[in-house]
Image (cartoon, rainbow, N blue to C red; front, side, top):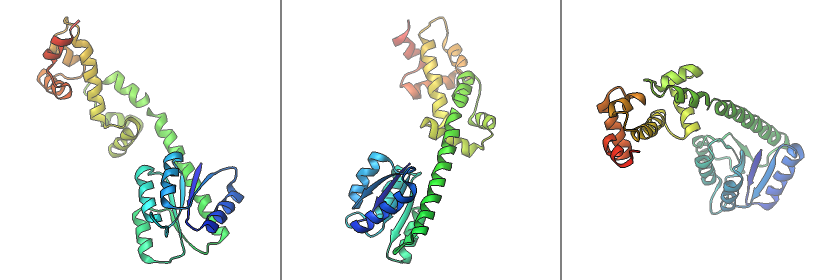
Length: 238
């Protein structure tokens, strides 16, 4: 598990690093940055699970850095550390969905508690991700076996016991696309193969890949490939 500490005060940076190592030396890989720009470079290299950020840093402050991290590494847990007990900082932290907010001078026990709880949250998130990714063939296998039928995202969601909304989110995470686009792509690719065989007419090809309406099949095929099934066949028939 990777933890980033960003603080422009070198002494504070080293004390934080030393204290965290004292408790989590075998559980965390710790990376330190003396400013926001350096922290960005480290983030892109190590993809931190937890980021401990000083809000007041020159160039790129902790709020700006946290926004950058959350945009690229949404699961990263953000903990702000600052000597300034200001309400506007607290509001910004809430907008970024920071995990917590620690005031200097901090207490060792409080720092330990925050890091410990953050690590537990990371572990839970990783466990959830593992479960989700283990269900990916289930999904792919079902679509591969049933793409010729009139199937929907709701059909697959019900098999997994997911709500439609949650399934859509999971599918996007796993396949980097939505269900309709993925299913359409699979059907069109299969249709391309079948169109090379002139023993099948266009209507038969459409029906065999899940489009009972030949006109709708032609419309979808042309939208996907830029040409009608018959035009495609003319260029690619065996």
